[in-house]
Length: 264
Image (cartoon, rainbow, N blue to C red):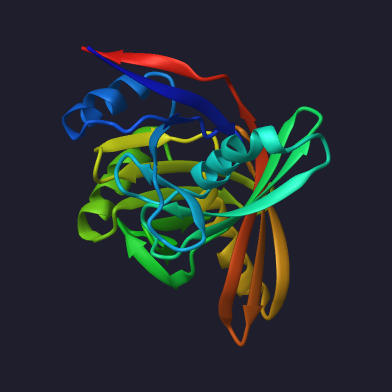
């Protein structure tokens, strides 16, 4: 029997289990399957290989996740911060080549994190199953932003599975975005794990929505508050000459103490 330490992180409702000990490759599927009973995604803490990065995290399917990045950053620096203090660091994150810049600030009731998202590789209009979407592609994941009437759960799940089968990305999201109310309902599929999850808070999905909104608004800086079941993620995007130059997400983070999972 093997024991692995892990911590349950809560970045704006996107519950993430971060495995702290090196996992035997033959046990990873069992670890992931067991931890998914109490969280939306599983990440593995690893040693970094790129200059400047203090640590690396690998998501369960090799996808990218901004929420996991800033939550892991908060866990790494928690003992260095008192209320009001902040610290910046670089993390390697699966699904993207360049280290991710994160800033963590300690608040009276937890932490606030910021993660600079990977470049928006592509933003264009697309049609799947007769419905119109804004396709937003970044390293490690592609999102389909749908601004029409909200779909029934089964319809949304079937549509995302069909769309993902036609897309080459490690992960894909269906983002049902109500521009009038500022509410987002994210559904995410991950190829490597085969998981299909209605997330309480999606960092990359929020970034996709914020980037698309900023592009529509034109040149300048736009901050969009993206309300989700788990809370609000703020997205700040910079646009120049019709190109999205940078996107940053900010959200709250809470965490539990370390615990142990046993794998037979």
